[in-house]
Picture 1 (cartoon, rainbow, N blue to C red):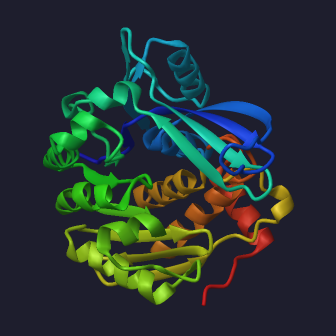
Picture 2: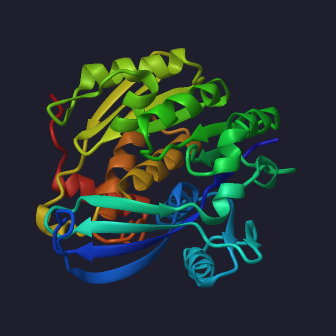
Length: 333
């Protein structure tokens, strides 16, 4: 059987993005310039990114939402990206998981306030694909679904997906380091592809991947190698605003600088990590060379910066790569 397609499962969330004039000190006021709603959560963001990239393969989504107004917005927006929303279970009386994102207009940096909602009771059985001929199974994210966290449901789900012949992909969110250290290592022996940001990689491996806020390439390569040693079977990658590094189990290493996006074009960075992963998933699925996978990840992340929400401004993949070529890449030291 020739497998094709990606199943993206886990914690779907509505992002309520507030663009504020600045980040305030405690007990002082900042002014909200505007508010936008974005259907989010790692699996939905990556799925929407794949649709915006015009992925030439099936993209399937699995998760849960409440039957509240936030759930209505989330499902409607997901459908608006062209996603099949039948895999999003609506929980009667449940509160849709949502995140209040405060994004500073001064510098594009953002801070998150999260309500776990129905994701707190999410069960592995409801996320496992059945009778699928998909190629990849993507799962996100440990640490924001209490029942899954307590039962080690993440590792169990990845293990079951692999048993079905799927290649597995894990994504994280930047929760507390001690929680990442507890939840993620048991997942790695059942993970084929791990794509983390610098903070997450440091938390899981114990190896710092930056120096003075800049990506340290040699340290990032070492952290990727350690993720492989911890059980990741095919590929480990680390991304950062400066660029990205990846190491394959065969020993191939790729290093690529990020796209030079003018500050005048940056509206928000809330979806950059998920956009990067979407680009990587596209390339991995299509068996692209490792460097080209990083290039599309960086290019998708760059175009995502043009909107306040996670996926709205991502372009078709050829246009993303053309934008990156026109802007040029940052140099990694």
